[in-house]
Structure formats: structure tokens, C-alpha cells
Image (tube, rainbow, N blue to C red; front, side, top):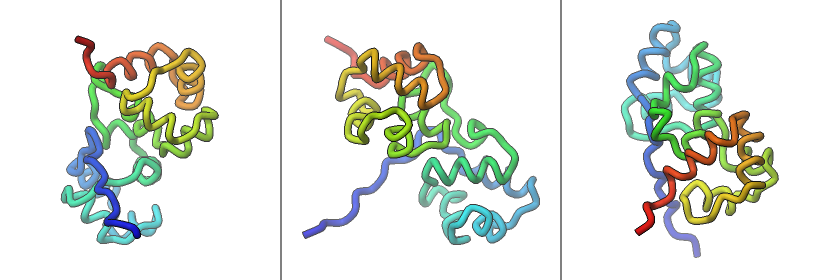
Length: 149
């Protein structure tokens, strides 16, 4: 028997007001943007009013359609970014990064939550998949891990 679907945590750094402003500046209605990225207009409304938040692949399509960088919609200071933040800023889902890196999604999820160690091979694979320097991935991973006692 299936229970209720799990509630996704808030998207770290998502700026709903920035989405609304960028859409307005681009001269697009919610309906026009929704058609362009393949979602219902009420979904755009819910994102702009913080009732829900977009998936990374929707964010990437939004940024492309509006002609803006993803970091205009997701604001996380570089010195606070986690591995999950790096993935989201790349506009990728866990499945996409797992496929690109050769990791399975379970392993990637554990790395993003700091529950699994980050091997040299995994760090290199993630850096390649995200088109980042390996040191950036390692630093992000370190911020994810709980402090040692």
C-alpha cells in the first residue's frame, strides 16, 4: 500500500520574487511562460507565491526562456553551496547527474545529504558531470557533512 507522497523540502535559495520580476520584465504572462516550459499556468503562480517550487529542469528551462542565469533565480552564496545546490544551479535532476557521472541515484542522494563518503572517483565524476572544478565539489561536500565532534 502506498502512503502519501513525501513532501519535498524547500528549494534552497529559490527566489520566487525574482522569477516574477524576470517574467514580467521579459513581457511574458504566466500563461505564456507556462506554455513555453510545459507546465500549467497555476504552477507558475504557485512558484511565484511560494506555494511550491520548481524542479531543477523547470528552472533551467525558465532561465533559458527568460534569458537569465540560473543564479538569478537560485541565490546561495558560493561559500555555502552544498553538492545539491551545485546540481540545482546546473539545472539538473539527481537522475541526470547520476547518469552523467555513472553513479546511481541512491549513492548521489547519500553524498548530497552527507551520509556517504566522497571518494576521489566520485568527486571527479561529479565535477565532470557538473562541469566544475573537483575542489568546488569537495568544498560543497564538506559543507554538507555534519561537524565532527
